[in-house]
Image: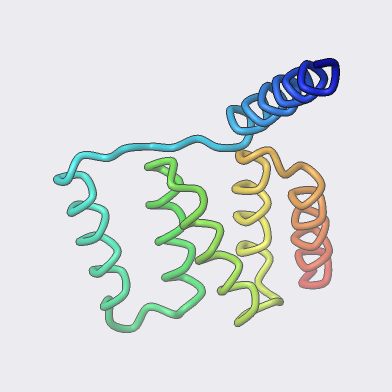
Amino acid sequence: MYAQAERKSLWAILSSQWLNLESKFLSLQIMAPAEIKSVQDEMTALQNAPGVPKSTAAILKAGLLTSRELYYDAREILAEAVKADPDEPTLHFLLAEVYEKTGLKDMAAEEYSESDFLLKQRQ
């Protein structure tokens, strides 16, 4: 009887901790189909824009996604862009902004620092 009560208490504690973490770090956004289509169309237009450098396209895409609070998608695009062009300070700065908005303060600080370092190298 005691072991069963102890398990229920432990489960209640773990469940409440998970819910606290979930509400702190997960923010699900449900978009209307028309809004999804709009984002997809804008992303396609940016992808197919002639003469736009890849880093610039990534910056524009990330800006579109963050304006719609689609931080996960923006982070993916910026992380890939940083891999392709690690010496572009703007990419690091925008990635830091996304990290900060999603609560990843340590990762944001690293990216801000890298952006600042790269900017100083250009002077």
